[in-house]
Length: 337
Ligand code: BDP
Image 1 (cartoon, protein in one colour):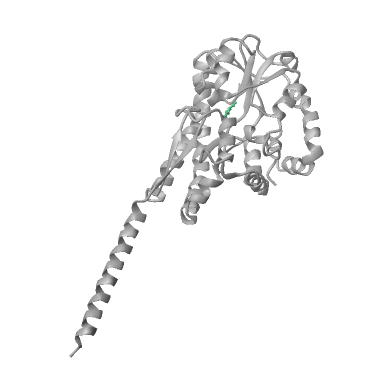
Image 2 (image 1 turned 90 degrees about the vertical axis):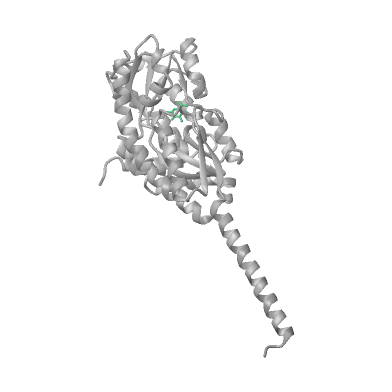
């Protein structure tokens, strides 16, 4: 027969182990229901293709992490203008953002190279570059400045649009004031093309145009449409002077607070979202162009596109002083081998 003392010890041991078991399953339940919520800043309204892609990204992340990671998209610059948001991501005040790399470039100067005017032969060329080690190099460069780059988005081609005077020749631009994205390279472009570059936040463009404080601006079809710029600047010249890729970025703080397992899920969803965004972009650019024409926009072609290309040659030379190899490599990727 078991002695009494031993019996008491045994009961005690069983009770303790039951309590511990209870605790750990409680902990497990807690972990299952525990969720983290993050903010993603977007400067476009919710009907813009890129904003739609953000929503898809957030939805899929929540699904794939079984609700552990929730990303709430803040549309239409409600967390601020892109340049400010970019800095806030850098300092950890905003967790995620979808940004054009234009406002990043004054912080991550390597990024200037990816947005040189007339750099890419076409959309496929740009994507070959972004998907190559050059794209990874840019993501690494951004990381040096506190940005965690998740994936690239398409932003089509930027072209000029004006209020009164249509642009069909290089000389038409002379002396005009055109709103540009805010960075040093854009000013170089204005100088090389002989117009006055007004680097101003995106959110100001509509009223700048409406009050005729600038003669025009430049952007892709979807932004020109969804930001209503077409209502005041009806002449759209399809010169396609620039392709400025976009990125989903995260702050270091956000990254550090997410488990490796969930981060891997986020990264793989981000990559898949790029494919979704590209597809959506293609479809919505066509729809946007049709809508713009039906709204009375006058679509123009430059008479001599090559003269626009020639005008920016000095910019390529200037940036080649520092990034010559990179520019060469990009140009060599113009056509698939
Ligand atoms: C749009 C970009 C957006 C920029 C905007 C601009 O998608 O991120 O803020 O251009 O011109 O095409 O500032």
